[in-house]
Structures are given as C-alpha cells and as structure tokens.
Image (cartoon, rainbow, N blue to C red; front, side, top):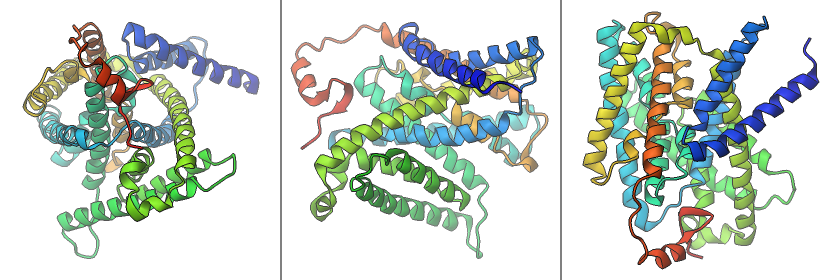
Length: 418
C-alpha cells in the first residue's frame, strides 16, 4: 500500500508544477494545458517503466470534468461585464459560436460518415465534441491579447461550451407526452432560462445575508448541486451557472428599481471579490488534475496510425476554414489571433466519453480526438506568439480615456456605474 504521505507529496508537487506552468506559459506562449497533458503522459511512462500499475482513471476524469466545467463557466461569467456599449460584441460572439458550432458539426459528421462509415446519428454525436471551443483553455491563455479581443474570445468560448453541451444533450433528448421534438426543446430552453434567473436572484439574495465565515464553498456546493440535478432532469443546467455569475458580477445592471432594495451593496462588493478569488483558485485546481489525469490515459501509439493523422488533419482543416470565413463575415476586422484561438479541450473530452454505448463506433479511433486537441492547442500557441509580437497601434491620444474607463487589475473590464 502506498504511503498517504507520498500521495500528499505527489499532489502537492503537481499543484506547484501547475502554478509554475501558468507563470511560464505567459512568457513562452505555450498553453499551460499542453504542459499539464505532457506531465500526465510523462507520469504514465514513468509508472510503466518502474512496473507500477495505475488505477482506473476514467471515472475520476469524468468527475473532474463535470466539476471543472461548472467552475470554469462560473469563472468565465465572473469575468464578463455587461454594458450597453459591449452588447453588439456579445451578440457577435454568440452568433460566431453558434454558426461555427453548427457548420463544423455538420461538415465533420459528413467526414466521419464518409471516411469511417458511421451511421449519420453516430457521426453527429462524434462531431459535436470536436466542434466545441474550450473555454477552459482560452480563458487562462488570452493574457496578452488586446482588451477587446480578449473579451470577445472569452464570450465566444463560453458560448461555444454552453451551446455544444446543449446540442449534445438535445440530440439525446426524448420528448414526453406526445410533444414534438421542436416544442419539447423550446419548452426545455424557456424553463431552463426562467429557472436560472429565479435561482440566480435567490442565491445572490442569500449569499449577501449569510454572516458565517464558511459560506463560499457552501455556495459552490449548492451551485454544483443545482447543476447536477438539472442535468439529471435533462435541463440546460449550465445556464444556471452562467446566469448566477453574470448576476453577481453585473448586479448594477440586473438589480434596478425595486429589485435594488434587495441588495446590501457594501456587503455584496466584498462577497463578490472573495467569491471570485475562491472560484479562480478552485478552477485552477480542478483544471490541473483533469488535464494531468487525461494525459495519463493517453495512448500515444494511436497517433502513429495513418488514418488517425489523415482524419485529424481533415477535421482541423474544416474547423479553421470555417472559422476564417465566419470571423471575416462577422467581425470584419483584423483576424489574428482570433483565427487560431479555437482549442479543443475539457468539454470535448467530457462529451466524447459521454457518448452512449449504443452509439459508440469501434471504427472511430480516440486518437482522432487526441490529434485534434493537440493540433488545435499548438495552433493556438502560434496565435499567442503572433498576438504578442504584433505591432501595437498608437494609443497615446486614447491613453487617458482608457485608464479612466478600465480597471488596471483587469484591463478589459469597463468602469462600473456606481
């Protein structure tokens, strides 16, 4: 039996190494996720070399994935400020995420159907995970991006996660009571949105009134509980997480008139600051262990198969051609690094391993998913390098306005109306 002290030492070292990766990645422009996956691969090879049998890790990865998804979407929501001047950008980010997800899913499903011979429905189930941009990777990686680009990329990746999960769930959705599929899905979305706002307002009302020092992890547990119950009942529970974060971060926008009387603003400001810190720390911790465990489950031999490489290159080509065309039509602006900021990661892995057994095609190699994840992250690394060394526009005449309207600690956020 392995000593518990050795286990604690191992976990502690992994957290320290992950923190070091976060710092280093800002300077070498290699996404920390790639370094974490590489660490997992190295640990797996080390275990094999010394004859140590690793335990079954897929169940652990699923739990970490679900927890990480909740924490990362909440972290993203707490980074998003809703202002009248940025609503057009939010709309463009939503449209961009929806269009890219839809078209990518359709074309990748066609490729899987044509080259692998899977059934149409099965092809779509495999295509959805490959079409979702990972906010878990984008959010901590856009450090050097220009403020407006950073905000767009965070919104787009978050919407891509949510829409991808909703699309995946709706593919498996079974209407009840003789309802048509369209009516059932519409009701599901409406109920999810309304319930999310009601629960969001209720949670914020409660969180500012609890005086106990132990409350933040209590609310994280409540949010995770609501998410899990919603998923179990086949509702879009991720919306609850997103809306709660948006309400907390943008309380000036959502608590107006009579609703404003429910606020203890002084208390809520302190709560928001502490809750944000704990959310970021927890998200970092879960993300660390998820990608290390994923690296430990990887079979590198699959990348040597010609069909895996061939299929992976075609899928990457589809993803980035669609992205170029879409961003050119929607953003109508300079496209770097947005074109390359489309990594696949946590949600892709989570959805891939959630495909029901009856739709699993043994001819589809998991190595294709691995190839797309690694390839898209390497391309994002190139995008970060290009972004960092792009010639910056002359903003001397705008410097004073920028400092007056932006928080220097979080430079892409605008000044709140207080």
